[in-house]
Amino acid sequence: MRFNLFSKTLTGAIAGIALLVANPAVSADADIVDTAIAADGFDTLVAAVQAAGLVETLKGEGPFTVFAPTDEAFAKIPEADLQALLADQEALTAVLTYHVVPGKVMAADVMGLEEAATVQGAMVDIDTTDGVMVNDATVVATDIEASNGVIHVIDTVIMPPES
Image (tube, rainbow, N blue to C red; front, top):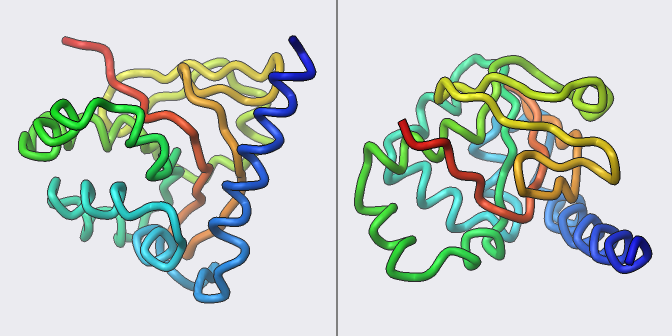
């Protein structure tokens, strides 16, 4: 079982790294939004950030740490639920800001954490027992630097607790 989990994590990590590293347009001089736009595999995230009106915020000075779900992560959400979320700016903003931690938290720093406060206000759980998990999402690529922070790629959209 441990091998299967490792194999899945390794495969996901390779895919996540390929999304960002294989694209020469991705550069540490680009901000978080431009980095996501330049990389393949983040179209849904970029559309969601635009729909929520968060582009200027995430292009701001920061620094920000973004746990960025891939298009495949968004595809795990049933289509009707995803469309409803994209149409509800308040709920969408809550979900997206739940993926953002203030400050620049590199992978080495994440390894020493059990939880982190998000911009949304709730905490995310961090488990480094076997790889790195943020709530129920596996971190598949780390330390993609941007001019205003850092991106860690995750394989699942994480949802904030209901208030």
